[in-house]
Amino acid sequence: MPRTDLTPLPPPLIAPDGTGLVAEIEAYLASLPAPARPTVPYVCPLGSALQPWYAGHPLPQATLLDRVLRRPARPVPVSAAEHLRLASRYIAAAGWLQGAMWDAAGRVCLLGAQAAVLAHGYGTAPTVRTARVQLMEVLHATGRPVSSPDVYNDRPTTRQADVHQLLDRAAARAARLGL
Image (cartoon, rainbow, N blue to C red; front, top):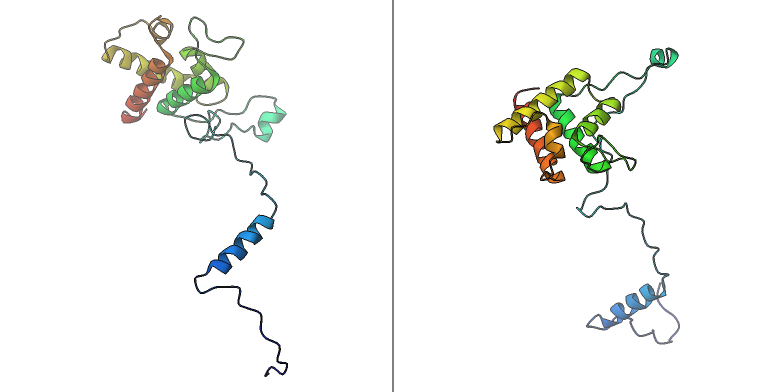
């Protein structure tokens, strides 16, 4: 439809160099309210989101018969290698201790971590025994002959990183052997 009135058209908002459009966009963005700060999950200093120590493993589920008989749920089957990895993760989550199995703050020693993993329903007593044999094998193979992994845990020269390294090596050995 042709234009009938003879009033002049408004000047274009965009100059040949585009500065008018930029100014208009900046004015529009300045008129918007400030965005709310998004809530993000807590990230630990190591750079990953915190996860429970049993992440990747199902929680033990009590069946109807277990609930009727008021007995604990069947343990989640784990290999000796998985048990050792879970023990390392439990120590990392709860804290490490020397000289006692656990304390009031929840920190645990090597044996306390293995007992806690077992008590939470991951693995069985034979699994723990196999895992402890793997710990002893690694200790003796690396030139640290001790009578028990607990003696190694309680040495004054042992650090938490040493315990994690021991658990990692024993887990790798157990995985290689298919245990």
